[in-house]
Amino acid sequence: MEEPINKFIKILVTGAKGQLGRCLQDVAIRFPNYDFHFKSSTDLDITSKAGIETLFESEKFDYCINCAAYTAVDKAETDQEKAFLVNAEAVKYLAEGCKEHKTILIHISTDFVFDGAKRTPYTEEDIPNPKNVYGASKLKGEHYVQEILEHYFIIRTSWVYSEYGHNFVKTMLRLGKERKEISVVNDQLGSPTYAGDLASVILKIVSSKKVRYGLYHYSNEGVASWYDFAKAIFDKIGNEIHITPITTLEFPTPAKRPEFSVMDKSKFKNIFKVETEEWKDSLNKVLPLIK
Ligand SMILES: NC(=O)c1ccc[n+]([C@@H]2O[C@H](COP(=O)([O-])OP(=O)(O)OC[C@H]3O[C@@H](n4cnc5c(N)ncnc54)[C@H](OP(=O)(O)O)[C@@H]3O)[C@@H](O)[C@H]2O)c1
Image (tube, rainbow, N blue to C red; front, side):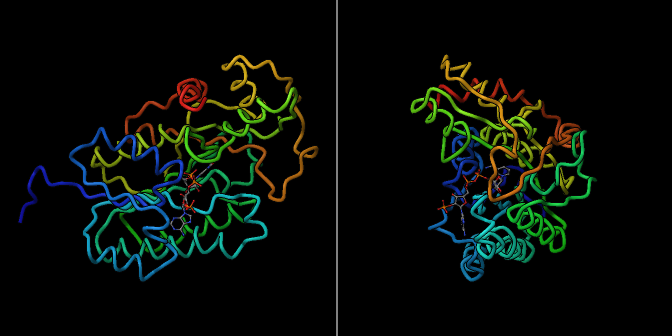
């Protein structure tokens, strides 16, 4: 039987109270014809296989957008079991649910699957080699999705911030109020990405109805160090705090991070016909929402 042309698209969003989940809730307002089911960690704990099965059996979702993740990169070094449970095993349960109920999974992954040894942007063909537990757990999650499903999109993104939750921008704004000078790492390069831009392109994937499933890289455009990122924040808000650029060696963290994790977005841009916003333009757009 042919599907009705205007069939409601039913979308499950997990981890709905995280940065990306909250931004998806904002962007969802522009899609009144979609039936969104936003589930926070208390509504749906993705580490509960039974919880996923019950939900998938009671509702028939066309898409599942997995925004749930264990994102505490440093804490993951000593909390390996939990990081792998949420970022890998739970993703397997979601993928199994999606397979059984013919749901398309849109799963979010990270630039931290790479070791950062390259000096040109990472493509989807580059071989991952995570330097930390978080990256390894996210990579295992990707592998489960690829092994279990044919109908999936994995979107790797980087350096995510927003007006919601905890992130680098909010930390800098807080430090800007507390201190007259700060030191920020200047030898790790990546692409800051506004979660709201990512949310918009995710829904563009859904609305495009393109079935070009697979692995994609998406971030805002351009390259920055954490020092550049901090400087842009303080320049924009007119805070003259003194920022000292330092090396990673001078600021040791429990988790090692890639020196270079800029991603090549051409596959994503070509297939979904999207323009990627410059990271500074997005930052300037978001800062007034945070202050
Ligand atoms: N943040 C970044 O810089 C960054 C960079 C690259 C890629 N990513 C990826 O982008 C995606 C979105 O990240 P984000 O920044 O939006 O993360 P976030 O703000 O930390 O949100 C993650 C959400 O997942 C929820 N969650 C954790 N464990 C869960 C569980 N067992 N069941 C259900 N929900 C659970 C959390 O809920 P509770 O708070 O209640 O635990 C939280 O609301 C993630 O896949 C992340 O790995 C993020």
